[in-house]
Image (cartoon, rainbow, N blue to C red; front, side, top):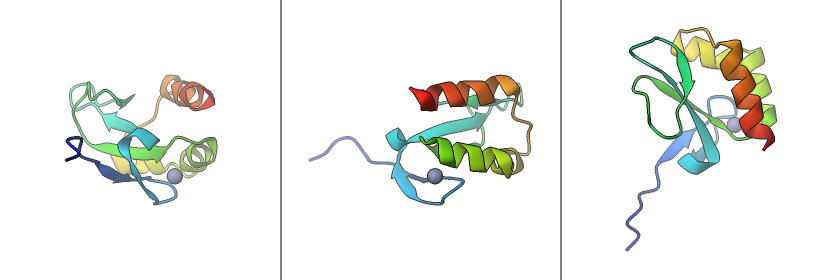
Length: 88
Ligand SMILES: [Zn+2]
């Protein structure tokens, strides 16, 4: 039996369904109201997922999909972090 449950989530940009390790989780921290990269489940709040590729990130940023979905502004700091994560 496979103990590890495969949680499937949908990319906010391309709408493809992937496992959690193929996606970046972005959470609007309910305490600070800031959007954080949250792959380690450190923060609690409303979350969106995005594929680990530059194309999805750029399109999502251009169309403000993350910000619209979380009703919150994405800080430059987090945008930079996202690019850093994806380039590695
Ligand atoms: Zn995608």
